[in-house]
Image (tube, rainbow, N blue to C red; front, side):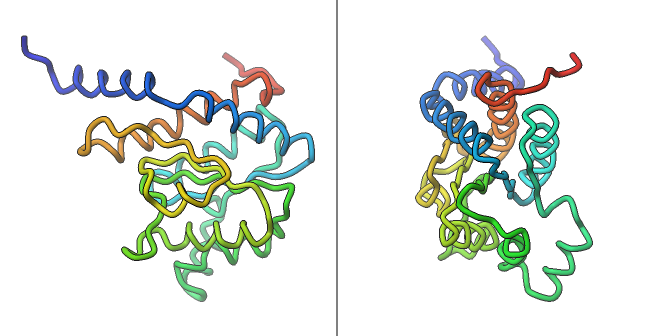
Amino acid sequence: MYKSFSHKFLQETISICNRLDKSKIERVALLISNIKKKNGRIFFLGVGGSAGNSSHAVNDFRKLANIECYTPIDNASELTARINDDGWNNSFSNWLKVSKIKKNDCLFFFSVGGGNIKKKVSINLIEAAKFGKKKKCKIVSILGRKDGYLAKNSNEAIIIPDINKNHITPHSEAFQGIIWHLLITHPMIKQYKTKW
């Protein structure tokens, strides 16, 4: 029987849902709940599609969970000035320095590959994570690969199962949204009701 691309893609999505590490997601929910109790802040970081997800997540966690959250993506003037003057690699870490992150805060990364020093990919995410570790804040990541820098250097890294090598990016970025919406709906985190 012929199966359309749509059918196959959605079947992959179902497989990912079934294979996600639910206990790890629960640990992230607890970690965020503790950040909130300590009046910590969450800084969402990502590039490309993950940058858009970062901005959306800031909205949800501020509005529905009453957690102070930020992302450098939301201020194009500052971000591009930092890229122009300081370089791409330090653009996020220098922004975090001004934000004065501390141990009660959390860096929350959305990334497909999670950064790779040798391949010089997502170095700005790696530098931000290094700075976060120096400041002893919590680091959480939702990633599409288990072999990147963030997978090895996060307090909790939720890895999106690799179902189809040709669809790692779309599945990873889609599941970033699914998982943060799960978290923002979690009774340990959610404070306000959605309109619908």
